[in-house]
Image (cartoon, rainbow, N blue to C red; front, side, top):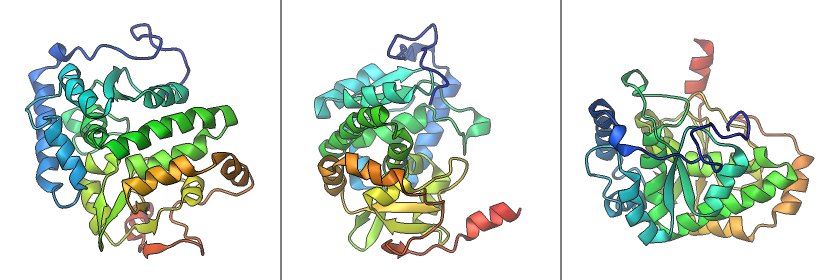
Length: 286
């Protein structure tokens, strides 16, 4: 979230800026290629197949940072979405407005070599590699638009924090059932080598069946691997629950309920894997 609602002097009123693809250095393109190669090598079999299909449809296997003009030709043809460059984090309502209009905002900068494994503010690799391939999938594309529309309503009702938890635990850090197995789809996972392994293989985190109200009550952490992952049945079910739910009564109930702290389990949870929380406990004790 940006600190205020005033765009920087070099940005348009909707916070967009030119990508200025020609200005990227060879070192910046090389950083993209290093990150891309590492993820593209380890994700097959771990990520939903729709993600890998999106990489192919958008021709993101081409070397170098994608040119948004070229990317958008294919993305718009597929689902009517486009990617727009922004200078950094944008205000919540502007973010929702863009999503509601099938525009995904992406930072244009890329991390430095010192940030190869982790950075807190999302860069173009997180935003474009992590998020954009699934926007080729019609149902997921509709979910993202529905989320933007819901965000605008949440802003009017003062419930942005609750709806942000839904985005965090689905769009950023969601898992989906694939028969008896689980697959990755959240952008915060698929753009991170370490978390792509941790989310599926490590015994530490809880893996809990998705429940809309439960997710919107649950706090999250932004500084390390997640201690909870919520598992959807399918993109179709996620879209159905989002579109069909009457959020007004849900928000009223949430106003009277305390948030659920990270790593807490509730008696009503359908726990697919009860985590040991060993990773988080070791980090806290260090």
